[in-house]
Each structure stands twice: as structure tokens, then as C-alpha cells.
Length: 235
Image 1 (tube, rainbow, N blue to C red):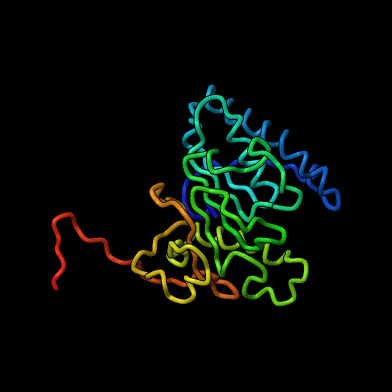
Image 2 (cartoon, rainbow, N blue to C red):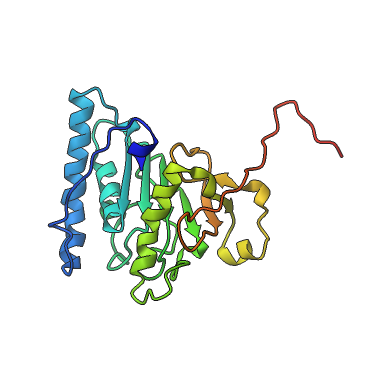
């Protein structure tokens, strides 16, 4: 998605042999060395190739989201700017300390996309801002026969990939919970873009929106126009 959008350097961490099913426990343990090795790569690029830790955006899905957090924690040459955790895995993470999972302190922006919360993924907020499409849980629209919540779990990377290409469909409303969002208690006038290529670091909290059941998932809408500094409203 990023390469289709613009000029980026993309590094893909291949840890498929360490995360292969059905050995989930081994895959969970592997997130620590995977994160540490990723941090070493970032440090190497920062020291030898004029890279900067603050220019890195780490993206991880499921267990990979925690590996991204561990990587950011272990970078020695600076602070990672942004992490996107795509439905971070919650199975067997109930008592895991923040040093072995993704946490909101790991980067300036830690954004979480929840799509199977309470099942394969976390439902509780983990980031500086947490994004809950369709309430953030199982089943996501279009995942009719999703008995193991796998379809809903995977929706996270489909939503994010589409948002990178066209963020207009992924504006969300800050709201305490999905029930209040659905009831219309949180005004659309406060909607903001929280996914995509260049999100603002100034938004914090929990955000909600609805999506379509099939591609394109995003529901394109216009954001409220920002008033200029000296502009006043007519009453």
C-alpha cells in the first residue's frame, strides 16, 4: 500500500518459520527476539545509512504488533515516531508485562486497529489512540461465518491498507464507546482522520466509525471545514 502511494523505503521482517501455526506459544515467545533484531536493524541504519529512528513507522499484525512494540522499546539511537498495531493478539497476554508487548509508551503515536476485540485481539485500549471500526469486535461486517473470528482479525490489515491509499473513507469520531457512537451522542463535527499516511499526533483516545462489508471498506465523507484563525461564525 505504501509503495503504491509514494516513495518509501519498506523493510519486511520475515519471521514466518517462527510464527507458523499451530505452535502459538512458541510464536508468542519469538516476538521478543524478533523485536530485538528489528531494533538492531533500525540502529544499524541510523548509524551507517543516515537513517533516523524518528523517521520509522512500524506496522505489525496480531503477534507482529507486539513484536513492533518490543522493537521500538529496544532501539538505542532514538525514539520511533509511529507504531500501527493491527488487531494486536490478546490470547495468552493477560499477565504479560509491557516490556513484552505493545504499549502506548513505545512511540509518539501508537495507533491500534481493533477488529476482533475480546476474541483473537485486544478489546481494551492499548495505544495513544485506539480505532474501533464497527465496535472493534467480532464479527466485522462481511464476516458472516466467522466462527473462529479469523476473518474479523484479518480485517485490520485490509482496513489499514485501504486507508493508506485513500484515507478519506477512514474518518472516525472520538467517543467513549460504540453504543454512544451508534446512538448519535458523539457529533460527526468532531470527526478526524486517524488512519492513513500522515495522521496528526495531536489526537488521543478512542475513536469509532462504521465500514462497508466489502471493498471499498471505507465510507468516504467530507471532514468538517476548519475555521481560519480570525474567522467568526454568523449566528
